[in-house]
Image 1: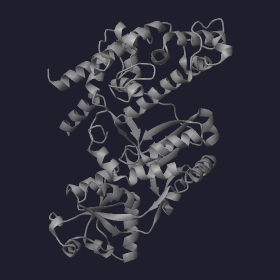
Image 2 (image 1 turned 135 degrees about the vertical axis):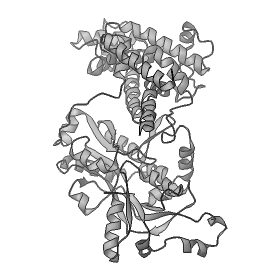
Image 3 (image 1 turned 90 degrees about the vertical axis):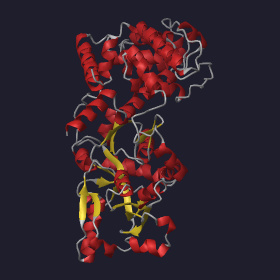
Length: 500
């Protein structure tokens, strides 16, 4: 049996086993951690009031080296960091949808697949007919991106200049490759009108990012393209062979966008941008992604930069091996490991827990771990303990909820979670539902009125820790699913390529 057939066979077994089990068993957990969930339809006329009622800010962005990506297990990016600050300011949970095709951004917004486009959009008159732009985040200009001659390092400057396009008039005889419907394509059309002459333009698919198109120039697949100067500049730090000095536009404002029927959301975002621009942190974030050359070079050379590989950490193989013991998606278990130690196997907490998944000494002994700093022992023991903890919540039938109870108990101990369940039941809440039920009472265990209640057997607990622990792991998992494919997805993708 070849590897691809084996992968398909295993996938079929997982699907069949999931169909044959009830919703309360551990076998159904893998069904929850799939990529096939369907969200309810959005109300495309909704404004800030409705968003506040739902409690979630839905943002649409692009997966690239500056906007949104994964690096060493951490979601990062200019748009991601600003979105996180915006959601916090509005007291909303953040949900990010990645557009597969840059050309789809405006349709996705107006079809209700998100509340705003959080991506560096050039403000143009045609686009103003489609969306309402926020205040600009920064100002840049468009520049021609072309490759220096092969022997450029040994050539005098005037000889290099003779082989490069240094004036937009010269574009009349040379093809430029850009995405159709992009601001770059729009600028080239305007430039043709200004010059009174045609510029040969070849269009590139909308699912290719500006970074990837620039790499095509570096690799010699195309001769030249157009990019925003700040994006071209950060790419040049890693590809010095690029020339980005030929300016083809005046200064242009770069902003986000909302639907035209969301004036209150627009007002709130604009107020937030005004406040943010008065803070140093705003400019630190900008410099981090568009000016910090050392950081950029380090990222794009790393195996743990999601654009380079399908890896989260150097411990992926170990985590994959033991995630199956508990029936979890390995990316979810990775999210928990990151939450515990940031993938540092030598990590030790203030309470004495150690290793990748942070086992207390007594727990480590119970699950047969002799060296918590050994990654394999630590993950194996951690999963064994997670299985033991999960058994304490047999009354919880819903597999998703059971995972949340298990995580909370792993964090603060089963006793405190059971106390919160009893409190929830006493106050008319469902003791077998974590969301908006037991999680509310785990928070109350830090209040004297509640931790001295007769149904509470384990006393005071800092409930904000398990509450945030569960939320953070699930939120990070959503990011991991955006960037990291499961083995079956990779195999199917490779098979489809071979079939073309």
